[in-house]
Length: 624
Image 1 (tube, rainbow, N blue to C red):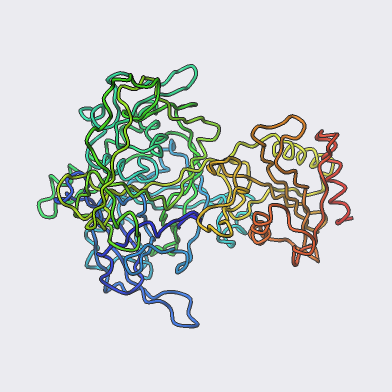
Image 2: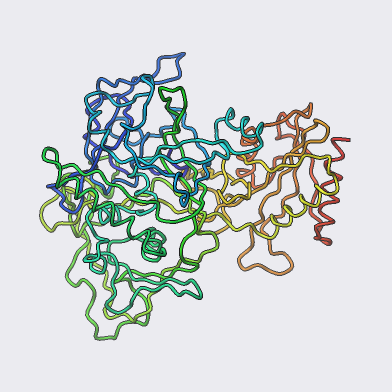
């Protein structure tokens, strides 16, 4: 599933996937192997299934499993690779445009001994109709690491599952299968560089201070009283790696560090013991203890017993806590601190920056896995997806150089190379190459805190329940929301009118568009009559004047059907999209099939009692 902020035209196509004109889907990872052409960038073997697009009147593409093929990508591309991703003509395309993709919110207790079972595909007795790997590749596919998770589904984009949850008034027990490489991708890496390091032993005791952290002048530390962590990472890591590196370095009992080390150790042991293919089959651990909520996308597969298991394609969100309450970091060669002396030497003296068609035109060239890029090339920075770490809510993470500068900054001269048309995630070379350096990361999203305005509304709902005990009052989620147990929803990311790849500011609480904005949707049922209340999180001005601190003060909205019928949460999504586009709740003539009403917040009396009285009158205007 590609995020709304996806810029896939920035990723050059993969020629190895142009073997067929069909749509192709990544159905499995087998293992990793040595990359002779890029020694720092191991290969991950992928199994692709071609599909015939459906004829008019049909809805599902037809799989051509007899034509399955395997392709090896360098692990530097792992940030864009997950089960279910689709390509056409070598270019990455949206899977949801071709296949139904279900998203679930899944409760998992990592500390429960029976919650996680390590297995392989061979241990899962799939029904004949559900088998998705051809016999040609079955042996290799069966050796890949897999985890079977036992937990509870809280909600799903499949409304049939939501109905079962509402009927039983409790989460639905379920089994989830997830590939080891997806756990590695989400928890231990967030850039091409970190992917390469995790698969080449950078986190071993012998390499940690050589390839991950620089402790020549500063030792990494985590203050046990304040919870502040600090480290200096080696050049090559990206700012998007900081939160994951902090977890690996500071998780108690070295749990996350052992998870990172296990990836390389297991794959190396497999390659040593494999007499034929020299293939490694990495495994890792969940790098934390305790309970978490996961948002997963994937599909259901049927077993021979008739039961269904959820095959997770991608982790989108995790609520697990991080080991620090504040995190300071910097690159070992970043500028900052006091200026360098006047007679200081310039940094990287004599070097040039090379650009070429690779930088100018993203439609030409290809993404390479068998060629190192030019070391002086201006890098191609690609950010295609986004991930959410709910555990980072309220944690300050910032780049800060504490030492003074020792070298001056001098702008490098630019040289244009006509032959540089491709992209590669490998280590740079000073020799001839047609590839520019390429770095792939994911945007990190953190949920906004439940601010005082939303908390006040939640407290008002509890008061309303005591004053009107016969009313059934429940919070429901519309489309998507953070996995923190608060049952709030996110305003969706909608592209700007002219620049579609840039999301509108309305959906975020911060100027950098990294903190998602929430709203509450509340279902109120009175004697079988359903009405729905909406309260939007207010955004603070920066700076915030005391007399008018909010950018907007949206009313409490009420919607209902003409006949007071129950409405599913996702049926409100078009209205919420319209709200983002208009920057306010839709007017009566814009609301379509719904009946609309509202009450304003009092500017004078902001007490919970006053708000409760207003909301009570609003609901009673419709249900009494």
